[in-house]
Length: 304
Image (cartoon, rainbow, N blue to C red; front, side):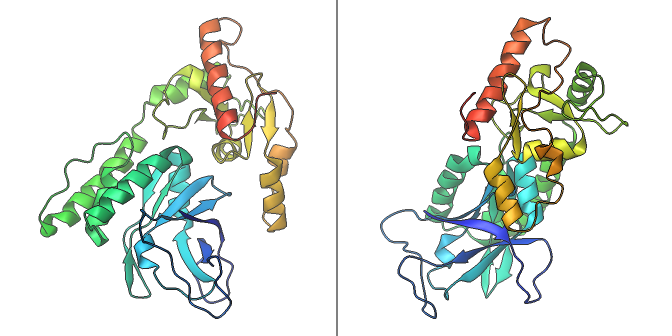
């Protein structure tokens, strides 16, 4: 497994805005010399991890048997956003330097799914549109149907699969949002904002198998805190205390992208508002505390 940090592409070579990149340098490769990924003996994976979005991106390792020193490999930001919000995102094939490549972004919980799917795709020698269709068919919790054998039917299948994925996302149980807002008095549990902009944030992300659209798995938040919570720039521990990721904040400051950090720094170690059921329904409270504890653990922090 080859793994690099995925960072914003700030090169001045006319790259489109909103791209992130990894820079390929392998052990022993010297400046000006060609490098390569070792594909012998074992399944090989080329990955990038975005600290900004808390997701992985996988490229096709077999296309990188030769590359120049510090070669850039890019991915669009919208794919990272999709993976952060939904757990899985598949970009259409892109031609880069004569290579047709499919890129997949995914939440850490789906790393095993990606690794296993990649092995199967390589064994079957899938590439291009067929590989795109294969990875779309692996979208968690969504049945996109059987992949057609005829190449002429692939375009229709891919369009239908993407439409179903989008429709499923938009049609998630609307009662969840209403119930969460009601539990928190239509106010952000972190900053108490109202103004009719409140959203229902899932504690256990919808992309994970054990996520539920139930009141114990939701917190009312304003759009800013919802996105920051989904990105795990802060978590909420089982006692409802806000805990921020100081390393991530430092990472953003060092790269000149920490404007607005007051939205979380100002609430560090503060207690959020609790839902109406908190002291009335012990079973729901326990479930919510367990969910919060699991998020804290997956973020790499132990409970206080």
